[in-house]
Length: 134
Ligand SMILES: CC[C@@H](C(=O)O)C(=O)SCCNC(=O)CCNC(=O)[C@H](O)C(C)(C)COP(=O)(O)OP(=O)(O)OC[C@H]1O[C@@H](n2cnc3c(N)ncnc32)[C@H](O)[C@@H]1OP(=O)(O)O
Ligand SMILES: [Co+2]
Image 1 (cartoon, rainbow, N blue to C red):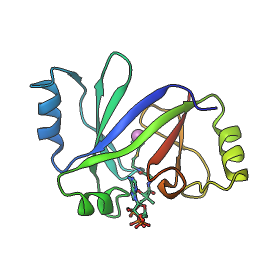
Image 2: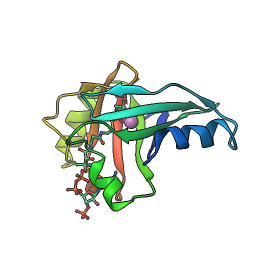
Image 3: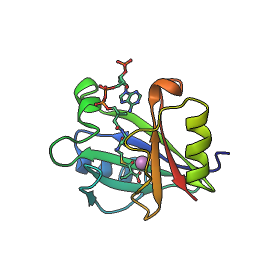
Image 4: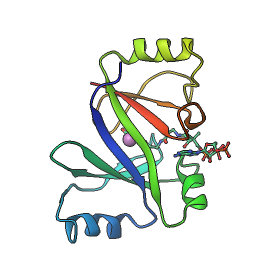
């Protein structure tokens, strides 16, 4: 069911410093910051030949990544995002198999203008999974 790896997200305590590391020493093509208040994050995408890295920083009160950064003050890999052809069908199949869909289960528009959902890390090897409609 899952398809391409759309992105790997890294939560970072200092977004500008992380972007500079990817643009400088790592020599990657780095985008501009995007505030996504509906998701409680600011993101910068790093384009790689075969996927993307999403640098994540909390935005506003109650950010879903605040707890993660408290537990990992230097930052760390936060989630992986896989593409699916039909996000509603994917959600229903996973829910039917007992996976916990985060939030109310309604896909929300993500950073690429496409519907996304999140799956509880406790059901997937301690890894938070984002699904994005391809
Ligand atoms: C920009 C839009 C979009 C895109 O298009 O790409 C994004 O990527 S937005 C990214 C930010 N949004 C989200 O992550 C939404 C979904 N996430 C959440 O709702 C929360 O982060 C969470 C998964 C519910 C965790 O929130 P937290 O406050 O940390 O809850 P807990 O303290 O109760 O943790 C529960 C449990 O899960 C472990 N955990 C938490 N985060 C992660 C993680 N990123 N990876 C792996 N495990 C994680 C945490 O350690 C707890 O474990 P136990 O103690 O064993 O229960
Ligand atoms: Co993401």
